[in-house]
Length: 268
Image (tube, rainbow, N blue to C red; front, side, top):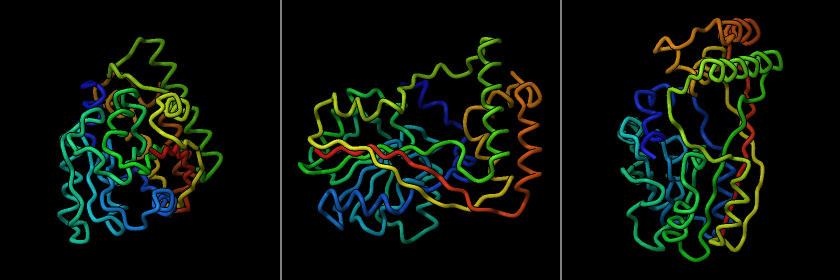
C-alpha cells in the first residue's frame, strides 16, 4: 500500500487549507450509538492533517490519529501545537491493518474520506480487534463538489471528466493507486461479519468558501501533480474554463457550501 501512502506527500499544506471539516452532528450520532457521551478513546484511521481527528478533542479523554504519511502527520502536529485545547490529541505512524494499539482499547473508530485507500479485510479485522464490545466504527465520505452554484458545479464536473478522458487517451498514470469503491463500503462491512449492526446514514455540513478555496479544493485532489510535472495543461482538461466560471459566479466573497456526507456505521 506504499503507493497509496505516497500520493499525499508534499500536498499536506494545501489539503489542510482547502478540505472541509466533518459535521459536528457526527459526534452526537456516534457517541449515542456507543452509549458513551464522553468516550475514553477515539481512534481516527487515515487521519491526514487532523481535520477529522480534532473534532473529538472536546468530548473524548484521548484521541489518536493513525496516519502513515509523514507530511500529513507533520501538518497535523502543527495544528495540535498551536492549539492548547488539543492537548489530548496525538498522531502515530501506523497503518489501518496494524495500528499497534491494545485490543479493545477504543470506544469509537473513524475513517474520514480514507477507507477507499485501505485493504478492506485486514482493515476491518484490525478495527474489530481494537474496538471494545459495543464500540462503534464509522467510515464517512463527502460528495464532490459541494452544492453551492449549479454553473460552477457543471464546470467542475466537465473538468474532471475531461481530465479522466485525457488520462485514458494518453495512458497517464502518475500514481499506481489501488482503490476500493466507496459505494461498496457498506456491503463490505456487512460481509466482514465483524459488526452486529450496520447502517448507512446521511449528514450534511455547511462551510463558507469563495472561488479561491474551490480552486484550491479541486487541486488538492489528483490534478495538481500532473500539472506540476508538465504532463498535461490547464487548457486540455478545461481547468482554465472552470477557474473562469468559479471566479465569475462566486468570486472573492465567500458563500455557503453544502457538503453531503455518506456515513457507514458498524457496531461491534
